[in-house]
Length: 150
Picture 1 (spheres, rainbow, N blue to C red):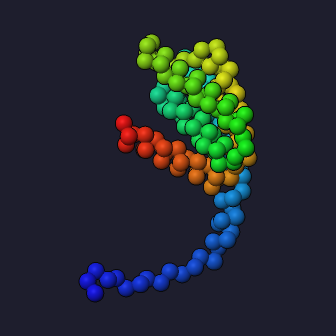
Picture 2: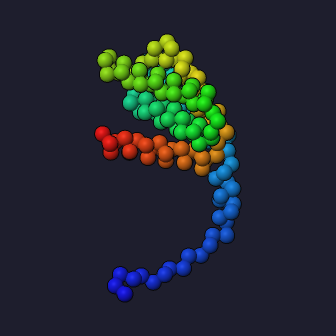
Picture 3: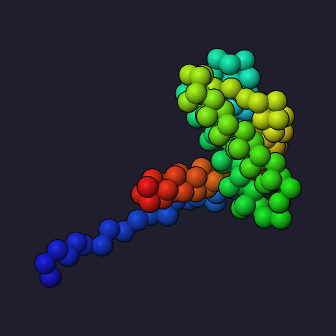
C-alpha cells in the first residue's frame, strides 16, 4: 500500500490525570496578579494619554477575552453588557488616536473601562488557565475569521 505508514504505539502518560486537574484549577494568586497588573498598567497609560500600541492591544485583548469567557460561562448578560461598553470605549480611544495621534478616553469611556477592568480581573481570578486559554483561542479564531472576510 503506497503511502502507508506503520502505526506508532503511543504510551499513556501516567501523570495525565494530575495535569488535567491542575489545568482546571483557578490561576495561582501570584500569576493572576501578574497578569492583572500588566493590564492595569496599560489602562493607566491609556488614562494618562501615554498609551502605546502595545498597551492598547493588551487592553483590547483583555476585554475581548473577558467577553468570550462570559459567553462560555453563560447566564452573564449584565456582565457581558458591561464588557461590551468597555470595548466600545476602546473603539472610541482608537478613533481619538486616528484624529490626534494618541490614544485617549472620554469621561463615559473612562467609567466604562473602569468597570470593564474590574470585570476582567474577576473573570480571570475565577477561571482556570484552561478556560482562559480556550477564550483566547476563540478570540484569535474570530479575529482570523473577520480578517478573512475583509
